[in-house]
Image (cartoon, rainbow, N blue to C red):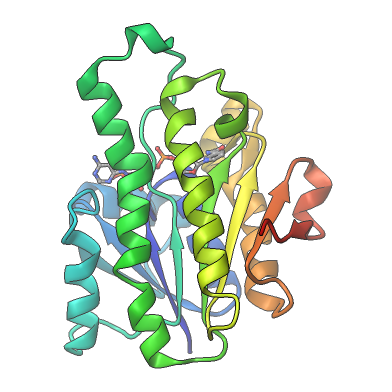
Amino acid sequence: METVLIVGATGNIGVSAVTAALRSKRNVLAIVRNQSSADKLIKYIGSSEGITFVKANVLSDSGVKGVVDQVRAGNLPSFQHVYSSVGGDYIPTPLQEITTSRLRYNFNTSFEANFFAYRDSIGYLLEQNNPASTWTICTGSQGDLATYPVPAMPQGALFSMAIAAARENETTNVRFNEIYLSYRVEVDELAVQHGVTKASEFGKVYEMILADPKVRSSRVRVDHLEDLEKLKYQRRF
Ligand SMILES: NC(=O)c1ccc[n+]([C@@H]2O[C@H](COP(=O)([O-])OP(=O)(O)OC[C@H]3O[C@@H](n4cnc5c(N)ncnc54)[C@H](OP(=O)(O)O)[C@@H]3O)[C@@H](O)[C@H]2O)c1
């Protein structure tokens, strides 16, 4: 049975990835910051079956590395797939009002943490050389719209990182893909309250990526609800 390492597993997008992994009969290795985040994930999913929790600080440049070291040491399950969706503030603060500490915090949560996740897990997947491996990141159209500059600017950096990772893995055993999401997704109970798309629905996109070996080194665009039923993907380099 395969395992998906999920970084940012307790957020709106992370919950969709956990749902997709479990629905596709895979186990999950979820990195959480503390027990209350782990409890939140169990509440959203309805069970902890199939999920191994590991505590780490993914904002630190040794957080994901420490988890991979524990996998290598045999203390945690081996994984074949990675999904990363760490995020920060979703606020409309205009540029001139963004404090230095808010800027740095958001580049740390929304860019650096996802970069560390890639940098410190890809080597393990390459070493394992499993031909079915994948590495997936979720970015958003805020990066192009920039109506919310705080979450938008780190997305711009993630776009570049995704192109580099897609190119670097064009011929490796790892199918790297970026999911570019153009509308709001939230965990199911909040999505119903706010009239937005449910994480469990959005999870279909990740299930289709896991199932389709043709989707590699691509941006998968999710602009409309019908994009949850059929993947729309394209290379960007
Ligand atoms: N939701 C959307 O509709 C949407 C659309 C387009 C793009 N995206 C992108 O997807 C990514 C995730 O979005 P999301 O809506 O899932 O965000 P979210 O619900 O706020 O979740 C963010 C994740 O990052 C973790 N995290 C945040 N701050 C942390 C910290 N200081 N230390 C440790 N972990 C921390 C959270 O852990 P805790 O649960 O412990 O807080 C959670 O797992 C973002 O980059 C966002 O731009 C989202």
